[in-house]
Image 1 (cartoon, rainbow, N blue to C red):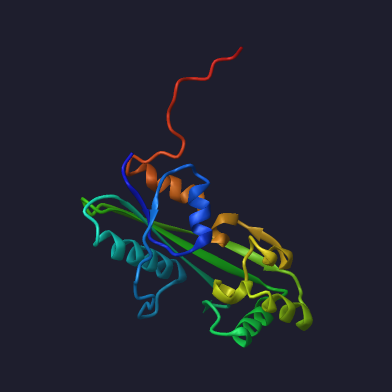
Image 2 (tube, rainbow, N blue to C red; image 1 turned 90 degrees about the vertical axis):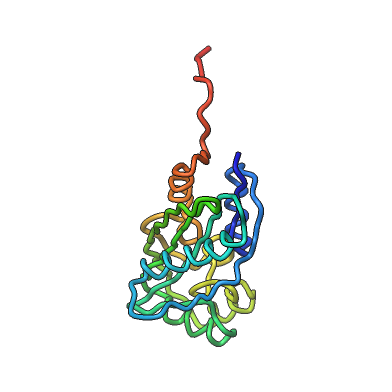
Length: 200
């Protein structure tokens, strides 16, 4: 199988990709995460996912490079990672009791040919009502500090999410169905064709 490279320092994305049973290496990109101009959330995550993958791809002669980016959007405002605990508290006060949208973009690039595919998924998240004491207690766990929107649905943050409409893995940060579909375009198959299973 061709060399697979994850262009991300996220332990969550690394864990998800490991779960597919694919061998890969990790190279953390040093990409500019600023997007100029008035772009839609979908275009923002596609742009940043591609930029991260391209930054790593440009340093390689071959390999299939995966880049991803995730943002949280409430009332048209993008909520990134908190700069400190007070910022995390501020974000969670805005999100609590309301519905927001999480966008995750995925880019896959063939380093040898430059062929690439980029797409995204979005999921609506309904966060339950939270008291200030609950918000402050959650922030003290430190879990929100490197997460877009200041929460992690796969961690302690699972206790503050009431429901979602869409794909869970989009909220974690790597939509798996989308990733598998994109990888197929590069002849990397998660579900490899094998001999037909016969009944007993």
